[in-house]
Structure formats: structure tokens, C-alpha cells
Amino acid sequence: KGLGCVLMQHGKVIAYASRQLKPYEVNYPIHDLELAAVVFTLKIWRHYLYGESRDIFTDHKSLKYIFMQRELNMRQRRWLELLKDYDTNIQYHPGKANVVADALSRKSGMIAGVKVAAEIIRDLERLDIEIFVRGQHGYWASLRIKPDLISQIKEAQKEDSEIWTIVENLDKQVEFHLDNDNVLWQDTRLV
Picture 1 (cartoon, rainbow, N blue to C red):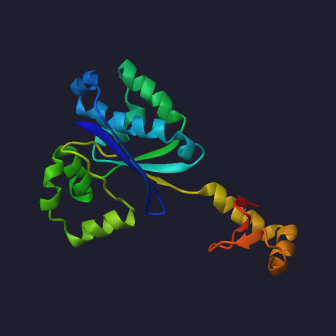
Picture 2 (cartoon, rainbow, N blue to C red):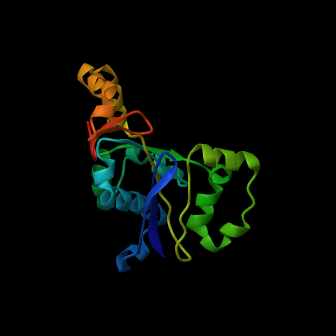
Picture 3 (cartoon, rainbow, N blue to C red):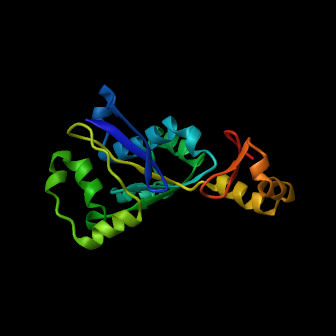
């Protein structure tokens, strides 16, 4: 048994992470293990996630309402303090809409035998959900990151007259180049 998560951006997997449950975590209720997977994800990838908006998909409805619960144990309170540091949106995808994650958290060996209707597959593709399975058991967390900083730089570059001067003279300046999204770079640095 363990915790596992996938970090994605623009529908592409950036990183995978997993770990075994610690001996004391084996006794945690499922609700806490689902929350532990989210906290594990936020802790190890905090350098990617600060300042970015992200969606967390879960098949546990109670996690969607975690911020509104009146009574929490100390562990849950500590974890909620960590969650409040991030711009997160916890989304619940029940049964049919989240068949793959549901299968992953219940019995990963059955994933190959799951038959999913075409509309569910389209929904999963639209949400850019991909799965990483390791071992026989796991808990799943999926994050989608919106690159606000690069978008803001790209918009600012469009309005900067100095940058337009550089772009107009790109053939004379070897150290500058435009990428596929028309963002100006100086060697390996974003301008």
C-alpha cells in the first residue's frame, strides 16, 4: 500500500511520485489517506505549485467539502493549514465520471478490465487526466497547473517597444530567439 500522484501541465506528465505508507499511516481511515496523497503532492512539488492555480481531482466527495467541516482532528487541521497556502480547487468526480481513479484507489489490478463508456473517456481526456499505476495499491491525486507567469510575460512582451526592436532585428542578434509560442528568449533566459 502506498501514496501516488501525477503532476501534469498542458495535458503532459511532468513528474510522478509515490511512496509506501509509513507503519502508522496503515491505520488511517481512507478519508485521511486521500488527503495524505494531496498533502504529499503539495509538499514534494511545492516549488512547481506556489503562485499557480491548480485543480485536484478525487473520487472522495468528503474531500471537496474539507474546508467546511466543523470538527477535524489535529492531523487534518495541520494538513488544512498547508492546503490554504496554495490556490487549490478540489473537484469531486463520482463513480462513472472517475472510473479510472476509482479503480486505482480500490483495486489497481482491475484497471485493465474496466470498460468505460465513450462519453466518460471523452470527459477524462477533456480534463487532461492521466494515470500512473505502481504496485497493487495506490491513492491517486492529479494536478493541473496553469502557467500564469509565462502567459503574463508573453502578454507583456507584446506591448514592450524595446522587445519589438529586438524582434525586428533578430537576424542580426545571435543570442536572441523566438520559441514556438512567439516568446522572446536570450540564450536560455526568458526576456
